[in-house]
Figure 1 (tube, helix red, strand yellow):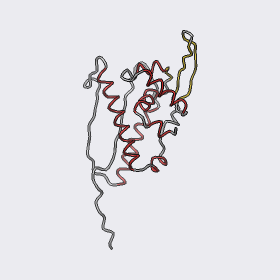
Figure 2 (spheres, rainbow, N blue to C red):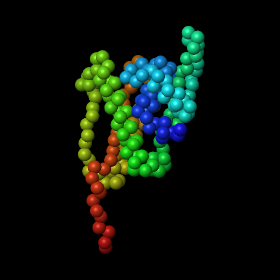
Figure 3 (cartoon, rainbow, N blue to C red):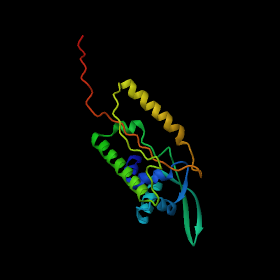
Figure 4 (cartoon, rainbow, N blue to C red):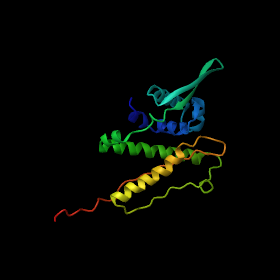
Length: 183
């Protein structure tokens, strides 16, 4: 299974999210982070991600007679590069977006189902803004957003940090205006 197929499943995408930030986790710890997903499902998808090269075994230890593995995300493998994204069909883009939205909905529901979930205190946001941008302004905005996000993507887990998901979604909401190329 290639990277695109591996990432095109809401549970596998949630596991990738859970493993971000240089974490090493056991499958049991991943189950605790995904309480709305059955343990058998988490174990199956961890196996697929490991077989596909997106997760590495960081270490193993014996626990009550069984071997417990701690996994680490291979971040360089858990991305869909620009060339691959450009080569997929419109229907594939529709499918990728649907998986992304299903994953986001599952993550948000899992957050709301936690004891003490407080969207106001946790500064939860889900706003949409319409922007009028030229092609150059759009490229500049994407660059600025990328710079801000990449600067924080290297943060590692620590006692004062909480993992947050941010899902920038950007697409033209209308047809571009027709241009008159006549001299």
